[in-house]
Length: 416
Image (tube, rainbow, N blue to C red):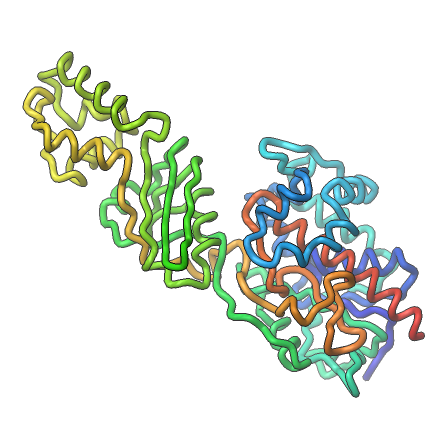
């Protein structure tokens, strides 16, 4: 059993839906295949269910948030800028609102409304749910369509692979796109989880799990001149650390031996060492009978203050007047430079995105077309491009998908 179409899109996530919508707008007949029971399954959990669709920053600021292959995205951002995406969603019936850090969310604060708007625009496409693809069909250097798990074949003039990566496998991210790319002769770079928590060997962090620290600084250095320092929010967990600062560092360490990184937390980044020392000495003089663990609540959250003397090797029951100069220096030194012993990154099941994928050297940035197979296009997380948190990864999916769908439609119509 077989059928035919002009543009076949494999994958119904943000990149796939954008590709199908763009191909429809260009006048092509479109078939969209999604192995899940609904479209945009991963979209429902992005932004904690609110869906941070893009970031309204300038081009240079956007590309600064893309640690790998940023220049590859220039044409995609020209084709669909963050402002263009906001307008597109509005036309589809999903108005948005910009929040802190230029992050854009649906006005309703519901990720489901983004999916509803995108899927609603696909009324003119042949959308097939529960349709897994077993392989692409190619012949003499051209894409011909795809074979389904059911054994059926769909012939097409152009094929867009938008199957996502390996992150959040419960949403249907199987990595099939990498297999399709390799079968077509493409190089696929090593894949590793990115934007995920950091596993540490610091036992005391387990005792502090659930504690969120705001306005702290996380710094790190690793072989190859890797450097990182940023101020923001950090969360202690049962495995180590998470939160925005840890996720950003995980992106930089992804694909490396994370255990070689030396990381530190500055618990008081607004105070230099001299100012912190003067403040502590003043407190000690005025609160000589107070226990150290209690006095530290003036500097740290209570749960961390209770643990902190032990981390520094000092008895928390010591009264302030009896804290020695070496003990004081040890405590204050840790406040400014608390070691974090990184053992590794959390797995794909908890990662926001995948690092690695289809090599961009074999994909034309102006069209997202394969340089090896005519009529074959790639979009979204399947590509070796990933970014930091803040709406950047979703925008990359939308922009590369829209460009791929448009280019695929033009190719299909020209070769009809």
